[in-house]
Length: 392
Image (cartoon, rainbow, N blue to C red; front, side, top):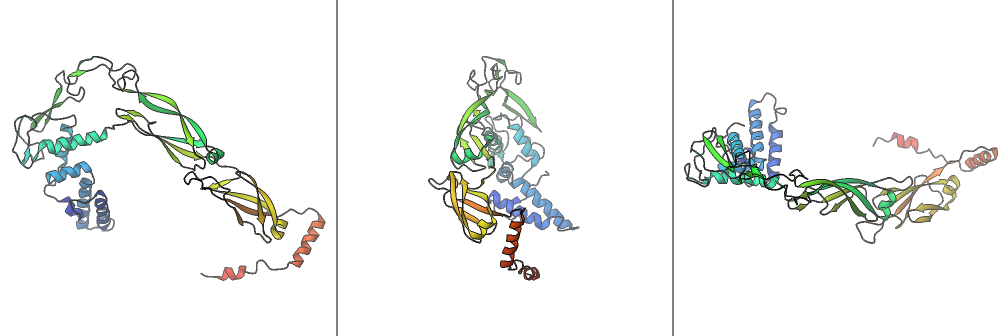
């Protein structure tokens, strides 16, 4: 990115310097839509404004670049990257000279990095600008605890309804029992990276920095690696973990098992078990409710009846009133699934009836049905023409 000294990116986006990340994102989206080349074809002014908005958002949407801009009052990509590289391995030593690196004016900053001042003193220190900024970013990237794990498990319909104990074979990273997570295997020799000095030299432009050796951490020695974990401090192993499935557990439930994730220097992460539930050939579950389709005869639908239907607790009676139509639903209160969330609560079961028309094979049945049709000659399709003519 080109140097952009004295450009106020907050003004470019029309937000305050205290704006939140969400406010910056909304302002960018609004301006990007307004000045996008597709919306303003052959408009050089709009195109330049769009690029300016893009540049401002690139800086202010990145926490590290935004802090650089806030502290320095401007942004220069080359100086930003050089500062990151110079401090990537730890604290910096004294610079050899007070010259400015290419593309970055160091005036106004203090180059006192532990020795004599190498430049003019001013409103902030070089250590503050680069050291704190990049040291903090590096610390945040290093997890204090081990990583979390996610494991997908499939259980049966009845296991989810009634509850069960699930035993899983989970591969995870555990602390090496030999080195206790240190990765060390005994006394070592001279660090080959720094030759035992504990520091390495790095030049940026006209400046030279001495910084802590990243390989040995400044000790000048490199310890031998643990032969069991090869210096990693942890080993892969498979563990049998028991997961209690509560009655009424739903599809997609995410169960957290604290401390059952991967090991890290500050402890273990967590294990998250995501459940998938196999369907049942008869019962269809909708939350805590159960739906069941039950066939009934024409006579039962016309005259009414009491039919027996299965539930998850056994058989139950359902009263079918005269004139029942195919597709009607009847509710059996509290015959559904026990709630895994509300203690003591339970869903309902809905019985959806389907009228089954018989296949007539004997003449007597056909004769009776013709007689029935004559006695009940109502036109069941009388409303079709009127409904077809509606223009709503």
